[in-house]
Length: 201
Image (tube, rainbow, N blue to C red; front, side, top):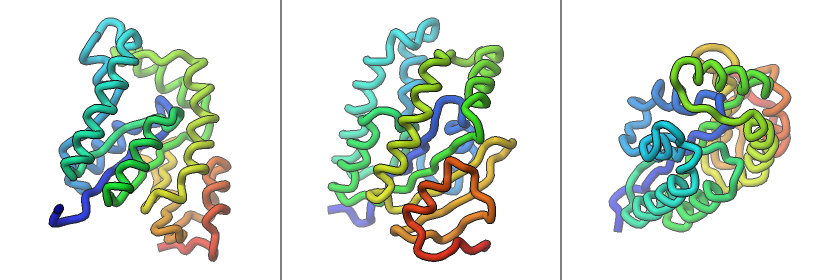
């Protein structure tokens, strides 16, 4: 029996959106040391060709997540939310009594995601094929809208500019904060939970 409700933080968004950057900015505030990132695991397994280790990294992620959930540990994961694994992990965490908070990070145009990944590669970072970024952009948003109801707290961050901006917050199914002009990608989620107009806090 856990003495406190365990917490899962999910940093979600397409490649190049800045998930790791945002997590690093707020890591002290959330107070969670354990972070699971499939891309980082793949790079650790094969720095020269991390793509070749994608499947192995994915299996390691599933194993680690299952272990932490069973132990009731607070932890965070990074995911594009384009596949179903993250959704399964979130659902399992909920079954085990976790509170789930998702920071969904996006840019105002997928072309910016592609540009940022290209810039990352120039600086020695890992490459993501353009076709993967384009495909994940659609499915990632689709899964955000589809599975939002099972997530306790959702924070949408527009990271088009340096530092990012919180544009919408949803807590326990209610909109608690929203900027006056939401970007197009945030509108479906806002409309999904709209009980009353968002209030500038």
